[in-house]
Image (cartoon, rainbow, N blue to C red):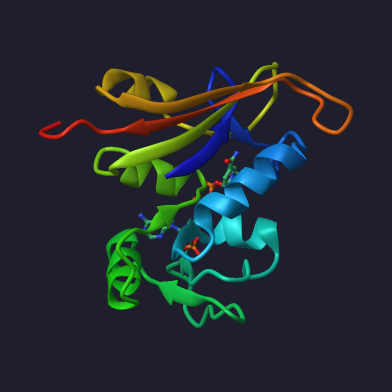
Length: 164
Ligand SMILES: NC(=O)c1ccc[n+]([C@@H]2O[C@H](COP(=O)([O-])OP(=O)(O)OC[C@H]3O[C@@H](n4cnc5c(N)ncnc54)[C@H](OP(=O)(O)O)[C@@H]3O)[C@@H](O)[C@H]2O)c1
């Protein structure tokens, strides 16, 4: 799972991400490149195009929905099957709220960016649920704000310990 969230769980507002952090977008690209990416229909519509170099699997129950350059799954489980059938060893869940909530209990790892700041939003990451599980912090980076990235943020790679 790959997510950027405010400390209190805001991830989106009116279909968009409430901040612009080119540094984090670059990291998102390098983490997901070459892997199937699984996303909800609203997240795909917010991005507005298939992301290159990755099998884009969009979950939607809409009849006849077939965005160009994407594979449509009718359920999160079907999205995982499509990823597995593509021969990938790892699939990346890239949002939004509904997909995060669905996959958080079972995902193996979370690439978590916490953006320091107060943001209004209508889409949330289940941060309480994340904190309730045991995770091993494999990597941690702190990033101050700079000219191009207006909010300080930190990146953590959380991995579920065996047996949890
Ligand atoms: N900060 C971040 O890292 C980040 C990342 C991604 C997205 N976001 C933000 O998150 C927001 C979107 O999140 P969201 O929760 O509103 O939408 P979403 O999860 O992207 O998409 C929801 C849609 O996906 C389909 N879907 C999701 N779960 C399903 C299920 N279990 N079974 C069947 N269909 C399912 C449905 O499509 P149909 O209605 O077509 O059936 C549903 O309406 C946006 O603001 C976006 O910018 C933030």
